[in-house]
Image (cartoon, rainbow, N blue to C red; front, side, top):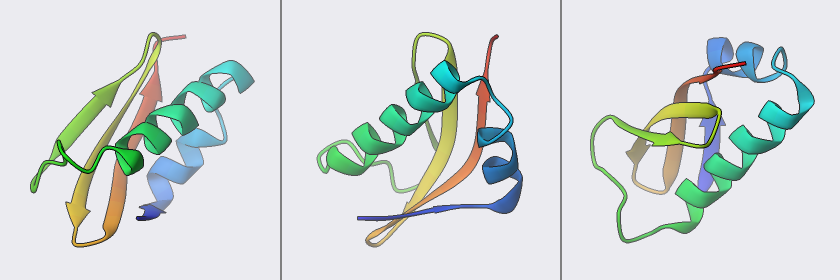
Length: 70
């Protein structure tokens, strides 16, 4: 799977604290590895302190938004 972040999501990703950055990257990796539960439309994944909103287009995961609660 290829992962693409839209620019606003990429901007947020690089502005969050390091531990939140790592958690968001782990969420992206988990979504990319989970072939069975990919939603064809808008979907979200949640970590302990962070989240991401994404959609899947064929073999591309498009990350639309990311954030953290810290």
